[in-house]
Image 1 (tube, helix red, strand yellow):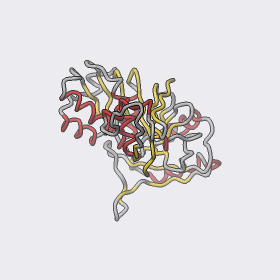
Image 2 (tube, rainbow, N blue to C red):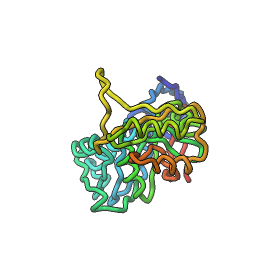
Image 3 (cartoon, rainbow, N blue to C red):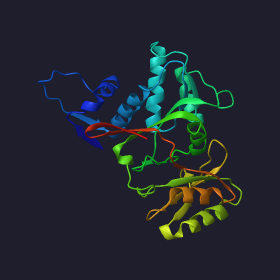
Image 4 (cartoon, helix red, strand yellow):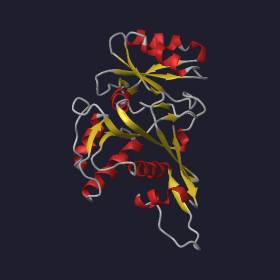
Length: 268
């Protein structure tokens, strides 16, 4: 989807650094056509402006976070950032960071993270998130739960009135043992919200998707709001067989939204 962005004033610096905007004189008129991926890149570059040398960083997973990790690697190569330690939230991000020369560690060695940058699948008006449609929700929640500041980066298509409001999946990581039983309990838990629980699969053979932790993911689809999110969170986690869910409640300290009119920065 291409979105016309004739001004993009609030994000000009990030856009130019991302190679998506050409500086012009005040009297000139420039119309830039930005794709959804362009918007993600601009939001990611803006988020990296929060990074300082010497930080321990949580490195997110997904199409938006990938741009942030690329930018951090670029700034390290240029010498503009130094003494950065990254803690990746997935095997895929680990491989990306290694290829970029970003020094890595883990929570065992660095239990306090200065800053995490990651994307989200949904953001509600209170900055609660749905994450994990990329399959890395458990490690993301561990790392981002240990950080002093969590900057979430999205394009405006991810904004919803309530979590689950996009009609897309709210993931729950479950152990393989009797996953159908667990999926059934999850669906029954939210029966009044029109919940449908489906095992995540991939490929032509519809093989079960397996997380980096060796678990399955059950995706929940809702027809209407699930109500009190903290109550829903506790209820999900109380089901034996559930490892973690994709609701990130009261975790994001800043959300950067890239849209047609530029960047919006929302703070807790």
